[in-house]
Image (cartoon, rainbow, N blue to C red; front, side):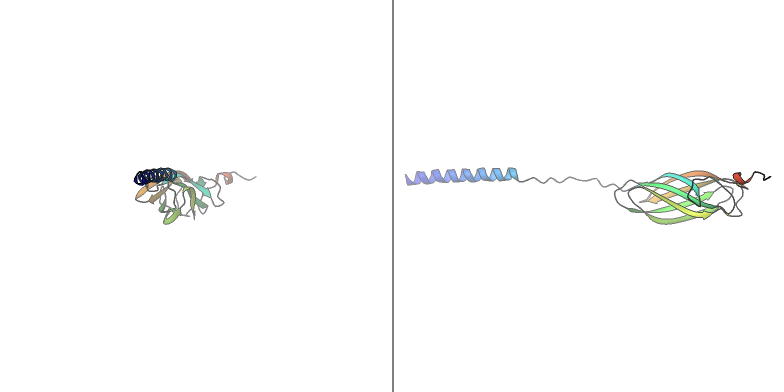
Length: 159
């Protein structure tokens, strides 16, 4: 009789331990590893245009005018990256060329390169092209502007 009570008690104890183990395992959160796709951030040139020395949009200039070659880029990643910016203004002659590395934060960012219209630049239509190179990928965009002999607002006669 002692032996049968002992086996019964042992069976109940083992059952209780199994129940507690199953209960605890259902309460502990499971950890699942998810593979995250790693993408290389891309910097895209969204818009290119010219502005005057005060930052006002403008596309007609005369010799000596201050000019800002302006660009908006978009970093598609979620980290700041370093990109090479290349600005070139060409037309009847190349009148501007500049390149330099710059940090680009995630999202949209604006940059500009200040300069002056050279005194020897022939009148005509020019194009500002901005190319951005990041992680082996390049993106570019361009915009036309004009160099004229005199400012349109100053060409009228005074009486």
